[in-house]
Image 1: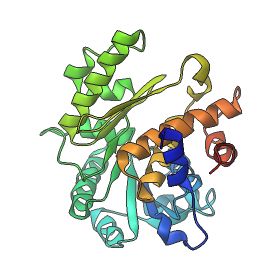
Image 2: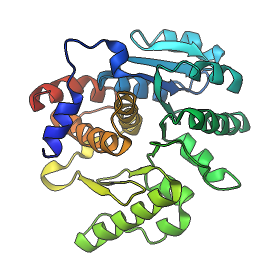
Image 3: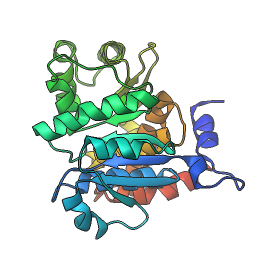
Image 4: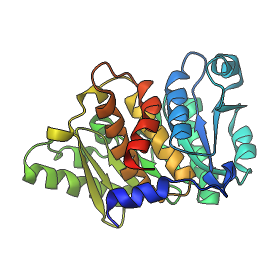
Length: 289
C-alpha cells in the first residue's frame, strides 16, 4: 500500500474495540498561566484518536485547566515522585513534554526524571518546545532517550541542540538544498537515537536507521496559515496521540505532519491553532477514514 492507504488503514477504529485499545496519552503542562500550549497538544491527541488523554500539571494550575477542559482528564503532578506514580499505570502509552513547560531548574530536573522513568518502560516521548531547550542545556549532552521517542524542533531549536549541523543547514530551496537538509536531519536523528521532525515549509522527518521523509508544504500544498502561535503544539499533540495508539514513531511523525498540513489547507485564511484539531474530523472523513 502507498503512504495514504497505509495511513488511512492505521487510523481507522473498529466496532469491537474500546478506548483502552487506542492508548492513553499523557501531556505535561507548565504552571499557572502557562497551560494553553499543553491544552492545545492534549486536544490534538484526543482528536487524532487516542482513547484517553490526561493533562498533568502542577496542583496550583488544576482549577485553570479544569475550566478549559472536559473530555481531557486532569492529574496533579507535583514532582518526580508523583510522575513516577502516574507512569506505573501501564495503560499510559505515550508522553508529550515541552509545550508551555517552563525553563527553570525545577523543569530541567523534571525532564531528566521523565526521561529516566520513561526509559524503564520504553515509553515513547514527544519532546517539543521548552523540553528541547532544556535538552540542549544538559551539560552532558542528549541522554539516552526511550525507544520510539521524537524530537520536534523548529530551526532555532534545532540549532540549539545540534549547533554544528545547523551551521550547514540550508533553507528550503532547490533539490540540492533539500537533499542537504535531509542528510543533516538524518545525522541528527542518529546522534539523538530518536526520530527528529524538523518543522518548516519543507518539514523533514528522519529516523536513526537512516530512513527520511519530507513533508512539503509549498507550491500546490502551501499552508502559510500554519505560521500562527500554537500550531506546533497541536502538531505535537497529533504525534503523541498517534504514538499512544501504538503507531511506530516514524509513521506517527509522517502522518501527523501530513494531517497537520491538510487541516490548515482545508481551513485556509484566518486559521488559529485552536481550529486545527476541530478541522481534523472533516479531513479524516474526506480521506475515507
